Image 1 (cartoon, rainbow, N blue to C red):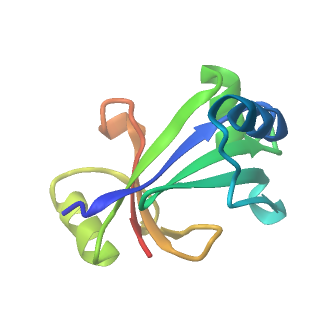
Image 2 (cartoon, one colour):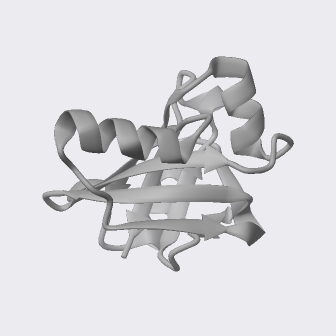
Length: 133
């Protein structure tokens, strides 16, 4: 089912401070830093091989990410695996009894690709995402 690690998203309190930290200590610069007002987040995206490493600052403390950050602190929010057919992959997971978030288990990411997100309550507390695109 999985083709590669599509991206890893970490949540932080201050995206700019983390970008500076990564630049200073790992000599990496993000491909882009973008504010998604409609999603209430600021995102710095790094490319590591075929994988995106995303540093995300929730701008709305009442959003799902804002609440997660407040409760658990900075760290991995989810791990996304790349798949060829998101609809089939979501359907397969639902058939196995995995609960997915979003309408019919599918949603669209801020960058336009399609995703299926597991409900951490049914995936042993870990949020997994499948991504196509």
